[in-house]
Image (cartoon, rainbow, N blue to C red; front, side, top):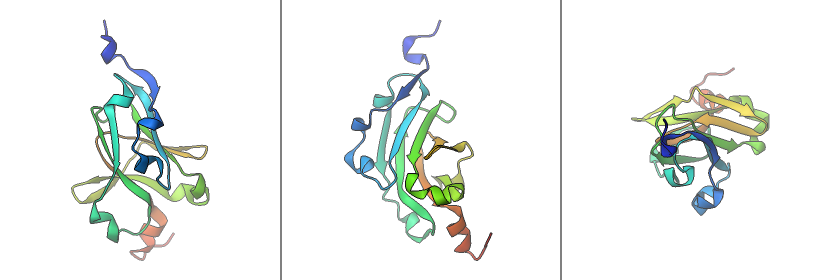
Length: 140
């Protein structure tokens, strides 16, 4: 038998539970997934103040930090509203900041005007890969 608190059910995070600075970002983000417990209590989000991004070309919107009990593969997803960026949607990549490196999140796909990505504890940013590559003289 599965204890209720361990049972995974589809949930969408209540946007009113997110800090105002997150709800006012240039690329709105929300969270959902088939997760255990209460998603509203188990996910915290804030803007990153990491100076690493100051010299990275191609950053779109603002980097965020996710603090959660959910681990990789637990089903938590971020939904980025990229409606203002549909002309470059195929160039946008969700990246995770790890130890001074940006790691592309493989589990990322587009649905309508949203970019959906598997997430867990950590720091995330959207990158225009084309602009990033051009910054090191690589052109498509």
